[in-house]
Image (cartoon, rainbow, N blue to C red; front, side, top):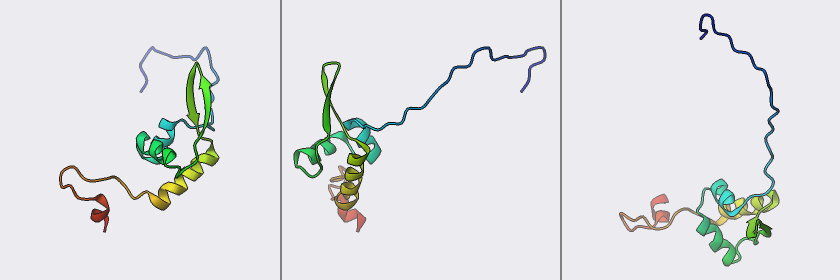
Length: 99
């Protein structure tokens, strides 16, 4: 849509770049996998998946997974994670709903 008598001109161009994410925090990994963070913490605590490397960022310890670690998480999820727990309404196991 053009407005009569109005013209726009770009006078400055800024170069934008998208950073490739090579490290994933707990929240990012859980979001990518479609699970909750507490599920991911449980898998680490029970040693189903290897613990991610830790770094100190601004005085806070943060765990990060690399892409290689994310591959292991995806493999574990597809092999052993079948879904959510009990349904609150019917108190039935969601595994029973699937079959």
